[in-house]
Image (cartoon, rainbow, N blue to C red; front, side, top):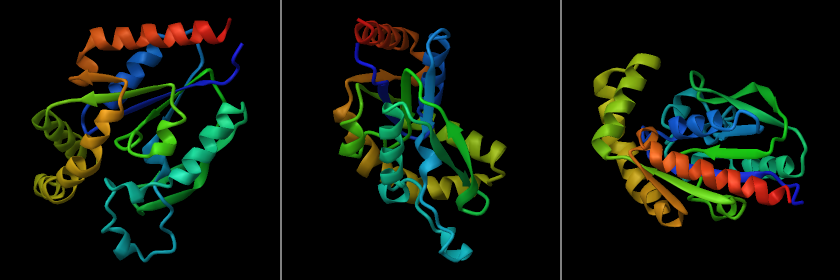
Length: 210
């Protein structure tokens, strides 16, 4: 029996439906312990940088993430050890002093726009997934989220999308699609693809228990 947890990476552009796909998969494994790790929790600590400079942080660039810490914690979880997952404070644009204790589970799903961009993360994954959704759908979803949940103006959302989000997507997110084992068009609405992925996960779990 292989006792190491299964690691699944779920990547895709902003508003692609990564979280919906991940949660739908989790719901299909009620009797199996599944852990969801959001790459967004691992933005770098910026407490040493003046607040005014933090406002210019490009959160869609690979350098915004503390992948060293993420790799370290995934490695510990694969060794069946608990970790202290960081909490990011979006109002202060830096890492919070708080952490969340995460216990190891049978399945680890790592979700985020750039989880397939880093070769070291890819090498830890048993399954690599890319959620591929049309750009017009993604920008509409992002606008609705940022305006409703984060109090942003339409103008600021569009300005950020044109000057930051779209260029970073084309440079880093979209090219990582070639590393995916499975591509899911239209995200959480693609029930057939999600069911097939869930079946594959179950097959891997069964094999590890032999």
